[in-house]
Image 1 (cartoon, one colour):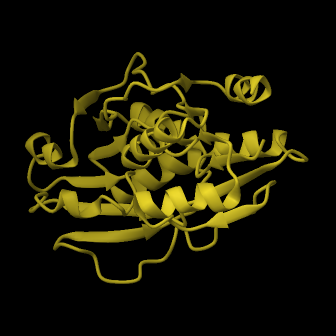
Image 2 (cartoon, rainbow, N blue to C red):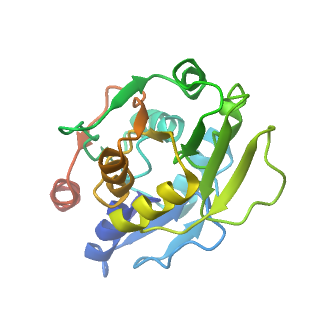
Length: 240
């Protein structure tokens, strides 16, 4: 068996560490310029669409795929599941549970980035914890100060007026986030419901500071196998 592990999440790295010594390779999309070293042989970059992915599976002799990409990488996941089904390759998605509000949280669930403007008054200071890949979808936040945090330094100007980048590499503690939000005077926090304990610190900080959170709901899942724990993913591999 040759396993392809689609990574990009902290859990993917945990899975990779447990698979050391097995016939497996981890693939990263290359979303960051200097990705963290991985415990498995690593390939970085896209596959070149469906045809490129099929070619890679064939050339690399892949016999099973474990998809541990970001919960919002739904296009990659749907494509991968479809190709694996057509080729009769075992496939499973690791999907960590989403965040749930706790007492004291002030969350508003929205379905898309464009909906945020309807809930944020003019003059507000908005902190985006959504990354740069979907940043242009917030272009209708005119009249607000928009701060987008990203890991890598920007390679161009902010895509719309009234915004700026803030460079920072996780993890961030609750104390770090509280100090940052107070310094910036944040009124609204916008995040995707990615789930996971490390990234929840910004939500805890928002709760403690009374900051409103716009929570972008996850895209709907398809009809493919899903596990929601690292142990479940490893058990799937062991059962192959």
